[in-house]
Length: 427
Ligand code: GDP
Ligand code: IMO
Ligand code: MG
Image (cartoon, rainbow, N blue to C red; front, side, top):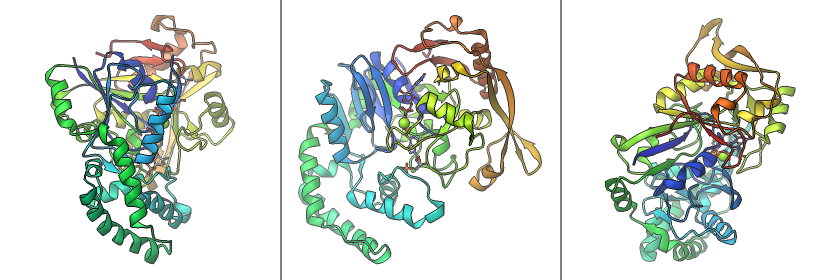
């Protein structure tokens, strides 16, 4: 059985949660490998509708181990809230495992996220304010506190005291904010530690055993390729890698072991927060797509910016991820439109280019060059076989496949688990 990475291929919110839930039935393990509770993965299945932020989307299957990998940053209060919500809905979370190497989001991280955003004034990134950037900064600066440290109170107090002394100077002297009480934070995190202790483990052994037994492992991405801190629209990016390379780092699985890399794309583009977005529709069409598709952030509730499918960005996403197949979601959102557009190139400084520029400033200057296609104007939400899709919908999909350079394995025609068409085998 293979290892499959399921990754966001655009600016996040492509429908990863739905696809992971749909494919997890036979998985022995689902591993979240990056991000934190900035993610919001919607799953609608026979158990109800769920918004998962840190818990992997395989949690609804009784035999699937759900692992929060070393590459995730965890806000323990939010994770506990999520576990409680799932339990209240009758979902067992006994198979949830937290890597002892995963870093923790601390109260000063969320506070600093807010203060940093305020200090950026007109140039704010539009973060989710979940402390993600400051937590990953501390990980790299070797100032982070890891989940495993919650199991050793004495050691925790020692490290927390020296780190917080420094953080309090930053809060008070740079930002003019109030300091945080070391004692209060320590007590709070001791309580979280007691609650989460049964879940915190050295996950390396678990993962290696699953690999050795040839079990199906799903690596669940968060965010999307165009938010990657190296290859995304920097500095309008997140702080951990949502790419296939990030999946290896954030789980401890070798690239040699990854058999399939499924890129999740929506049939159009959205983004939340600031940053360049060449195909953005600041008009009635953008509003129509937002309303039709209920494009409002799962984590923050912010209206998502909407635009046509950007094949230049999609090709780039394929290049840096090496997709073996595509999961195309939200095709049904286009059921009512008479005409569709795909951006196949950019006009940049008077020239036509077909690559994705590195700098946000250059990308801001790119004008989309569109190809127009007919809409199919019929309901696809009940369709379960690829051949039954309207010819014009199949043509739209074929143009996307051609322009990205990769085939679809899955086409989604609605948010529910069963509103899924397998256009070619994932495995
Ligand atoms: P994620 O972060 O990638 O998991 O995506 P989100 O959950 O943030 O946003 C995707 C939204 O699209 C959710 O509201 C899903 O329920 C919904 N969704 C997923 N696939 C489809 C689809 O094929 N059609 C429609 N109409 N909605 C979908
Ligand atoms: P899922 O997993 C969409 C965006 C934020 C902001 C930028 C940086 O649901 O697809 P951060 O809080 O990470 O420092 O914010 O990244 N962002 C997302 N956008 N979906 C997400 O996750 C996102 N996670 C972060 O809106 O623009
Ligand atoms: Mg989301």
